[in-house]
Length: 227
Length: 227
DNA sequence: TTAATTTTTTAGATTTGTCTAAACATTTAG
DNA sequence: CTAAATGTTTAGACAAATCTAAAAAATTAA
Image 1 (cartoon, rainbow over the protein chains, first blue to last red):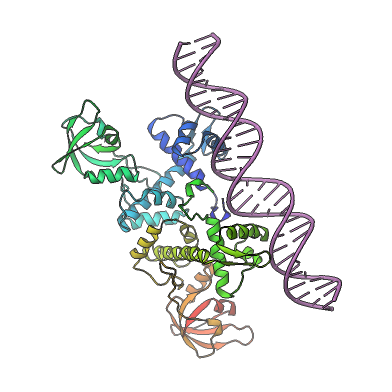
Image 2: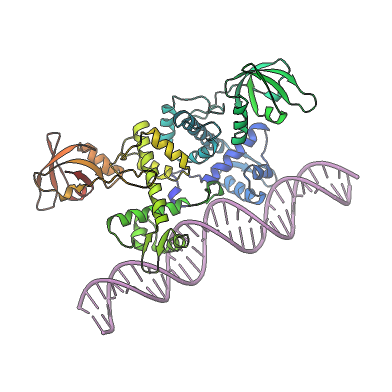
């Protein structure tokens, strides 16, 4: 890594930050230690590379790690991860609100911007954007102390016939997925009603804007609803 | 360098981009080949490291380089350098105009932002900022084709007694330098008159806002004037 | 509870960008 | 026009992050 990127005191490389972020996301769902292979898969790398990095992060006291036992974040590592996530989501808001990008175009750019290291920049950006609570995909933006404004939600795939709700977010950020939702009129804040659930394949039939449409069970799992 | 930063087709690392930018700036003043030591000094690195990098950039056809003969940019290398400079200056405008940073606070942050790789982002940022012609230090911002809107200027150190002009820019971006100018009321666009030049040390006495002040010859060299 | 399978780690290489020390070229001065 | 000084390159090493192939540990299943 070039010396030109080296930061001030708590130096974390882009790569280290990406590992911490991945470990954070993987421990969001199932509590407990995060496994080497799970990290490798998420980061599109090899288990051997992950092992090397886990040892390094452990030496820096960013994670707790013992051989064959997986990893979990220390308070310092968690704080670092949340800060990267905060930056990612704030930049996404900027890209959509100020530069008129669509919600399916911002993920990759934010992956780069999230590593810019300037606490002052983050706070001023937050202010410029009027302290947004959620990013363009509905994900909560942690405040400067790392606290999330937690809003409970249910996966669309868990709803029953005749349940109603608002689309609050998505748990998949790929451009293909988001474009598909857009085509079906499924955007943030939209009210919907479940009109039927297909016994055979679990696909969900919904009514949005008075129009009937249907999504596969796989897609329904990634649509987050507030009832 | 992490694979997470790897760009699309014409992949240039941050380091490579910084070398190209430095070579560009060094060839702005004195035409001809840029010397190894000059690059090493500007980049705060060693001549041996520069030699290695020059060979690499030469293989990628970003510079022309022959042993002991220095380097100069190929059209491709020049285009790459100008694009980095364009991004740097646009981000500086953003930081000052939108996030209310002072002109002496933006250089280091822009050094990071200039490497974000998204042509779409740059064009949208340019539009968002209403296509600015100059950055907060007066430097011209190349357009998307790499063309500069060239405005001729003279260094304050070259003016004679009773010459009048406008402050159009600065050729030194350190916070200390810029804060000093600010304290003297020397900001962009300010009209000034040279009231005297000190024979002994070359320092320049000027009148700004009807107040008499004085700058050393070294400082005067970095203040750019349009008569 | 041994055997098969999966997961994880180790060993050894590779790439990028850097360094120091020493050798080699070029330029400048006497 | 040599000799000294300056500038540049080579050689060899190192740290970060990655890889493949093989070994070791843990888990699952018969």
